[in-house]
Length: 317
Image (cartoon, rainbow, N blue to C red; front, side, top):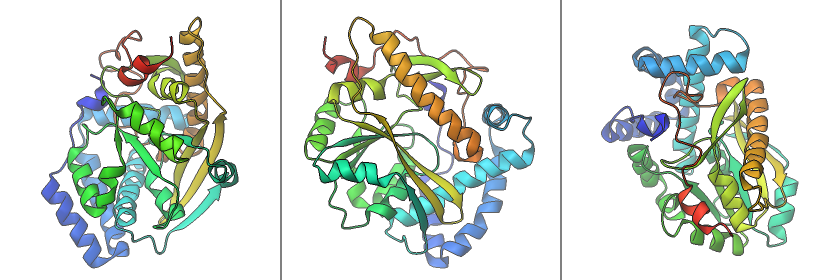
């Protein structure tokens, strides 16, 4: 099990619901004002291993030793995106400003009835896509998620938007690949994040922020099996209720020959990691990594020979 999946949620579901009711009653501005003391509490009470991991990441992204202000800022930006996520899931998108870059490439494919895989990261907020899509969006959007690590938060988010639970394709299930393929065949969007992996997934160590780091092979195997074009997607936080929504071409199709599949997978993972690295350097407080990503302080990540349950089984031989 990876360090990420070992981390427990902080706070109870009751507390999360209470905070949500409070910010809805007081409004976004009051909720945003509460974020600084809340962030200070979480920074001061964070486990030592988490603070160490955050500092290790920031040192790599910033190119210098991070101070307490840097650590606070990363936690604060994360808190801002969580507050925004609550409002966006509840359909309260008024007041949000979103700059969109590269939409024309995605739009052209969707207008042609072609399904697209959006590959993102824990960088900014995926939920900001809702501002662009709107309630009447004709395109089916199905996020693929690993559900076991944040059950309480997911319960809250599903209560805010009941349609969300039905739209999620859970990773690691027997029908994961089938549901993703059906969505793409209907000309929809399948979205997933490529910088973390569920338990037991095959990992690839590729260069990232100055050292080799483990990235999952699963997203690239999945894209190979599904045969759909892949675009990168990032919803960068740029300030209070301000986001930059980026769509970038990544691959017309990811094809993996059996003879050189390990090398090809590593190449695709390295390309993804290189783009993520560039964005982490440009927007260092947007990547929400709270565990030992490089394996510097804990046990090493799962063996590279461990299988990717769904995609590996479905990959052509």
